[in-house]
Amino acid sequence: MQGRAPPAVAVLRYISPSFLSGARRLFESTLLHELVSSATDRTPDAAALTAGAETLDYGMLQARVAGMAAGLRELGLARGERVAIWLEKRFEGVVASFGAPAAGGVFVPLNPLLKPEQVGYILRDCNVRVLVTSPERFAVLAEGVGQCPDLRHIVLTEPAEHAAQATPPLNVIPWSALLATPPGAGYRVIDTDMAAILYTSGSTGRPKGVVLSHRNMVAGAKSVASYLGNHAGDTLLAALPLSFDAGFSQLTTAFHAGGRVVLLNYLLPRDVLKALEREQVTGLTAVPPLYIQLAQLEWPATVNDTLRYFANTGGRMPRETLTLLRRRVPSAKPFLMYGLTEAFRSTYLPPEEVDRRPDSIGKAIPNAEILVLRDDGSECAPDESGELVHRGALVGLGYWNDAEKTAERYRPLPRGVAGHHGGLQLPEVAVFSGDTVRRDSDGFLYFIGRRDEMIKTSGYRVSPTEVEEVLYATRLVGECAAFGTEHPVLGQSIHVVATPPSGVANINVEALLAECRKRMPAYMVPAKVQAAQGPLPRNPNGKIDRKLLARQWGEQAADAVRA
Image 1 (cartoon, one colour):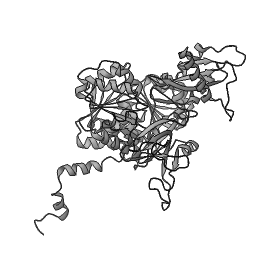
Image 2: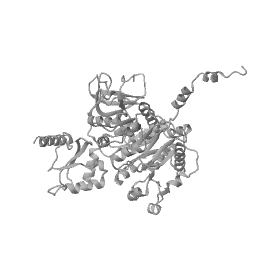
Image 3: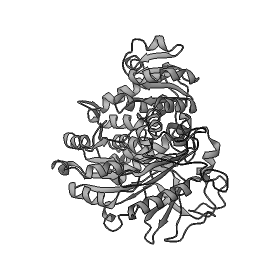
Image 4: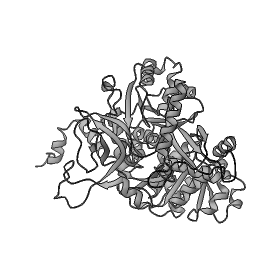
């Protein structure tokens, strides 16, 4: 045997380098933060993240993520404890999002549009231990942090002279000091551990925290990157908030592929077009309201030379808008997608099917199965409407600290469905979306409507009861009901019917809307408040009948148009 290679080595000689490279990629990144470290191992000098005029390569990004993880462990962050991030899109937010899971913690990205009251609610709801924010944001939040009993540490992106004195007994630490912590041993983390909690509006009450595992987020990154064809030469524009599942997906898919992400905080749609041209963006994901605005503008000619695809999420793309976009950038492939935070991503329509089925939400993404089920749990026949049910590796871990709502949405898959037979003793949990769809004979899905009363506006899901709670808190209404009405740009606009408070003859609509602007993010502010005399109509359960009010408003609007 002397001079002969061992059998395993001999076999490897007959395996092509491209196969080995593919095999290595197959086994990379089982944990969220490994998306960055694996890309660093491959190409440490490649551009990873751009914000303004500054770009971090993967080596620099990985060093900051490691420093963040070490700093959080030094602060005493326990395994599974929550780290909230309330920032506009900037380097620190991305580093914290990957550094917290690397430390064994869970990151909680907060929409930068949220008001302090809503931020405080989330901090209390998921028992946040560390908050990463800017001095400016912390200044408007400072009075409320005393009502967050689990909060111990505030990490500020820049030094603030009076922050430490104003917030005892909280520990206020500068970002630079946290990242300067020497590396140390961390917790053991596996792919089924919690990685993130993304807050999304529910059909009733305040937002719910959707708990996602490392496995959910990494499997989602690999799945989306596979059908979008993301590669190391890609530049993706992060125009959506990173608190959105689709917004954060720009980071995970790009880092999985070794590409670059450009962080953009835009004021006007034209800012997006400028960024597409300046950064030579190859992939854009946005929501229909933004695409509707972009389609009305003239696009720089060079964008068509670089933009490889544009992807839609957060609602149905109007057909006219899709037609205009394809004229603006004929070289770019359109990907129409559907997703729900509870399962990260669910379906996409391949570009080659867009002309044949422009109203379809497509088929299941790779490594997921989408079922259409009747109320009794059996599968629907072709063209029969039923509930969209998502099964597979992307199904989340439920809602944080809410067993009742988790049981409503995350339910065991019925026996005999999708190969789930009686011999399997442990149940498989799937996400029952609450959305009604149908599947045609070729397997393509079509969205029909929601079973609940959620309002979908500007790409956001808004709970009508959350709007109503704010209205009641103003004490300027007696009774009120919020509901969505069709809107050509927003998808739906928020409409409110309200009665005056007891003892008041008429409701002060202007004062009410002014209070709404103070207390709500802009996307939640009602577009119209209609005054009414009470009491408002009730359904058989004694609750205010939103559906009846919405139907009456629609009839009145139609009569006005005919007149």
